[in-house]
Image (cartoon, rainbow, N blue to C red; front, side):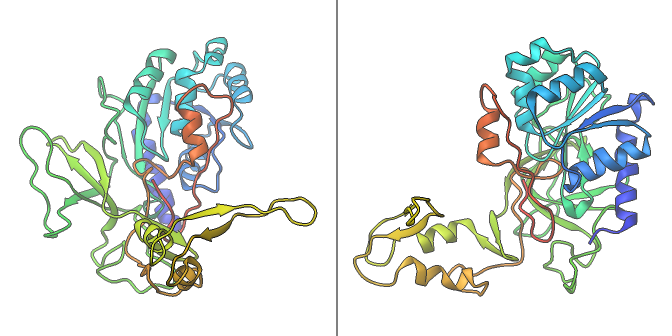
Length: 354
């Protein structure tokens, strides 16, 4: 649950980060407002600054370039596949993007080489932010006034956000050395932007938001003595399935090789009209129970061989403000882009992130 105060606080916190831009602010908004990244950084921030927003129903490369060339916005809020498109695609050379002063990447980790190439190509400042729905979402952003920022980091905490880097085994804060980066620990955050909790769930010490108000992000990070944070891993990768959270490795273990050996696969069989429906699992068996029997308890939402859990969330896109890109988007961002696909995961309890 995010309160009105949570959302207003985060909007004001984020506004302080972008204050050096001045009052001439306009932006292109192709991210869905239903996603927390766009809700805070596009819709709410834009309304606060009375900024002109050029909205799009979705990302279309040609239309996007045309809008930027014609209306000359100052800020672009993007996701990594769009950043890759702007950094690499030849069509960008034919568009006038000289008005762009700042490009903010979120929803997934931005590759440092892509960010550097984008900054050189457009002559704009490129920064990366980090957040999660439970934090409204922004907690960390690379400061605008930093010379030569390391795009492999998520920067420092925004105003009024406190954070800790906690050893998952001992529960103690990791030591921060005078030089270099600390040992990895889980990132915990707190502030006026931290969620109230999950609807209908009684708070407890093992929840994502603990009894002391710290939101446990599930991301393993390192930090230096300036407070610059770098994400290095996830504590546990989980999949959300009908409100339950299931370890991805457990899915492979349960659905992979049936007892007695064998393999598995999927097939689409045409119906009487020649149409192909959804894939149906097929497993080769030499004995023992089949895949259907072993995954049935999980599909019904009950605890079974996969032992659903409530503790963690997936957010490999984590780092940054919002969440995940799908395989099509990732493939589109890795080379020449004809169409850039975006999949911004729906937020909520146990939302797939990062």
